[in-house]
Image (tube, rainbow, N blue to C red):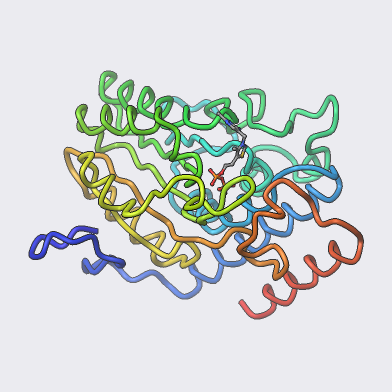
Length: 297
Ligand SMILES: Cc1ncc(C[n+]2csc(CCOP(=O)(O)OP(=O)(O)O)c2C)c(N)n1
């Protein structure tokens, strides 16, 4: 967030905000753990999919779907619902898990992920209850979210719009055209979250395109910028609260995360960007580590 005095981007939010109860934080941590567990089961059952970027986004999705978004699973197309665009559409396993856990469709459907004839294909589409935008072609989700934000303003509605982007995705020029447009239109009902796990398809983002200082770039493009630990439930909640209070500009939350978060051998490597656990031993180890984590929560 910006510190008005020295005009620097700060690492944490310091504004006084209502307390978040320990129970709430624990509930959300358990939800994130459950999302991760589903991700592992889904990609292993399908023998395909993208666990790395799904695991890095699990805490963000848990907070969005179990705390932040105003949605109604019984009425997925409710006109006043908040909108969410998973711009990094390949992280669909975590997204579908969150939607099923929230009640948009039965959880047992999750194991049909990526199977022929399943509605849960590798990239999100509008046939999935709760999905607001087809994604998968990187770089386009923020523009779609802008359309939704503009529509809300034009229709005098107060729903909010959230888009989750990858940091590799942010290399796409289209993202920056969208960023300029959102600031020009003063879209304060729009929140972009960048999953800054520092790794893209097959290597570290910095080896492809240097993004830093990323916070400064969004700031220069006219956005309110919040920089957080994207695995810290309290920081995610506070950043979303701060975004809601921000007027006349869109907010971007740079969520610093770890690719493959939660599974020791998947963390901080590109190897599991688009690969499931490679054998039964790896599969069991992943589930064991998540179970141990669940007991610690
Ligand atoms: C336009 C486009 N180009 C290439 C791809 C293939 N692709 C899928 S995921 C990926 C890497 C994305 O990296 P990042 O945004 O950092 O995702 P994360 O690490 O969060 O999974 C690429 C290049 C794509 N889906 N869309």
